[in-house]
Amino acid sequence: MKRIVSILLALVLFASLGAALAESKPVHPEGTIRIYCTGQPQFLQMYYEKWLQDHPDVAPGVTIEMVQIESMAAGRQKISMDYLAGATSDLPDGIYLDAVGIIDLAAADLLVDVTEYYAGIEGEFIGGAAGDATIEGKVFGLPEAVRPQLLFYNAAVFEKYGVDPALMSTFDGYLEAGRLLKEKSNGEVYLSYVSPTNHTWRYWGRRGLMPQANARIWDENGKAIIGSDEGTKLALGFLDTLMSEDLLYKTTMMQPPLYEATDEGKIATFYIGAFWDEFIRANLVKTSGQWRVMNAPMFESVSQNGAPVANYLCLVNNGENKYAELIKTMWYDFQTDVVSRNAWVTNMEEIKGAYSNPIALNVLADSFWQAPSEFYGGQSFRQAEGEGLNNASPNMPVTEKDAEADSIISAEIEKYVAGEQTMEQAIQNMDKELNIRIK
Image (cartoon, rainbow, N blue to C red; front, side):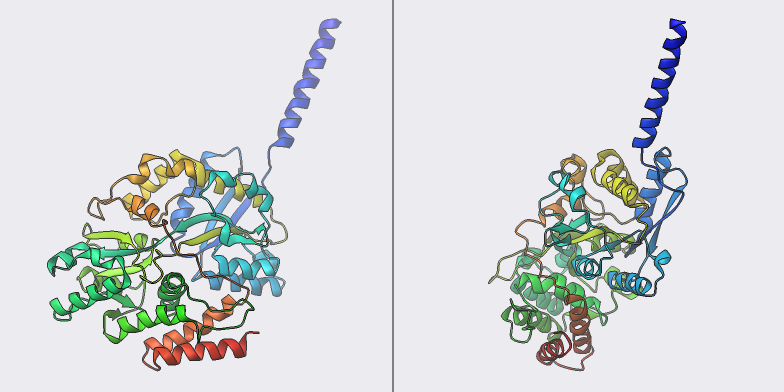
């Protein structure tokens, strides 16, 4: 009898233990995680699809779809419109955003607050990684990447025309290098490029010259001052000099003619964020091995390297938020698992896929992130990207008004590039329109 009682007690104990384990294990409903992403999201999807395959016990029956969007602005606009239309079933589970997008959607309560979750792991990441996703002490995005502004240059072009790349440590030197290349090549080689689209404000302006010049759109009271701001005059005045001296090749960014001209040696440099690596590795063939990378030039009066660009994986408040915890788990493993992250990057190198430097301290410490690259003639791009974060310019402050402001400013820059107005007129028109349309 005692033996029977003991067996029954053991069965009850095991049953209770099993129930407790089942309750402690998160249960994720079958379905598809949908995340909006710019650029080339198919490469991130490869990582997360493999993660789900490797963890069948965590989320059986769950798949993931990285939905390509034209821009972060387009993504946040679609989310806003679907929400206002009551089409909550069309809302994604996540979206990759920058500071402007986060402020916009957080103000509409369309992003999940991840403050408590991130506070528990913040020490595992580089300092300030969540800075641009933090609004009044609340974190609304999981940091995906923090990437510096860099200068990519074709070393073979500089060697051919006897121009020292070291000149380009300052913007005065960058300008001089452009003049020398133009002169010695009889006008065949351009210092860089300019696009007739909104990419010029985005990459030359907001993410490039403006923060390096300590430029401001607004004063402390929120009034538009771009028309009188000295930093703006310095930043956009430099762009105007490059344009007026015909040092920039006019072509649309991220389109075949740009890559063709670059492979033909007509475009010598790209002053742009580290993300540009994925595009030139994927699209340049003839000049592979000729490219090098260095810190962005500095304005001598300011002496700051390029401003870093951060982007974030934001959880969309779609009412159900049924995959919020699973997305956090997958994101954390992507950021901190050294073996799987390095293996994925190795695969990206082989297939010319997109990837960025990690932000988790344990992954960055691995020697893998100092490895040389054939595309850069043996230089370690990964190491150069890390060094590019030193002495970085602070980013321009972002407010709820900046999403609309960007469209206003970009429109004036586009008219300038098209030759419809001078830079001085463009700046004054920006100021006027901002003060009229944004209160």
